[in-house]
Amino acid sequence: MNQKGQSYIEVLIATVILGIVVVGLLHGVVAGILGTRSVDMRTTAVNIARSQMEYIKAQPYDYTPPYYNVLPLDELPQGWSPSQIGIVATPVDGSQYLQLITVTVSYGDGQSFTLEGYRSNR
Image (cartoon, rainbow, N blue to C red; front, side):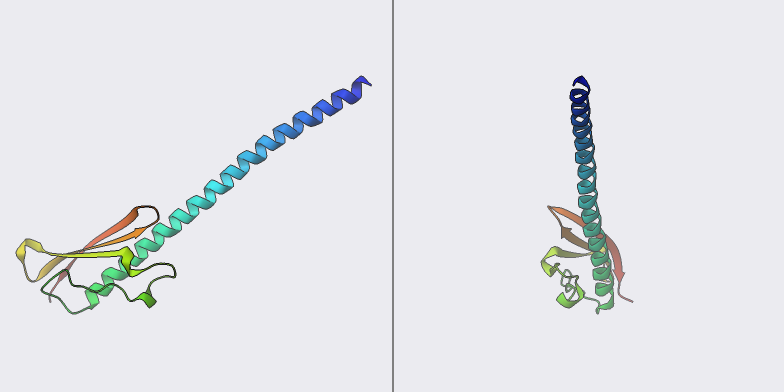
């Protein structure tokens, strides 16, 4: 009779240990999924900023910044809107022929990615 009681306690202890291990593994899986989502959003924001910069450089030069257009809605990934993109064009040293273009893409909870580049009138 004493042996049956010990087997039950051993199974109970093994079950508790297994439960603790499973909870730890699930926590790791959830953290990995959330991290992947964050990286995906940042990568998409970087790609949008680069596309926006190329879009601006392809447009006719504007001597009166910051009046460059934002990418058309059909060129943005699903779930992203033009309101998440900010563009600032600043003349460099008062020049009419060289501008510093700053593109900021907002995403997530207050996060953003900023890309800077120069544009000249050639």
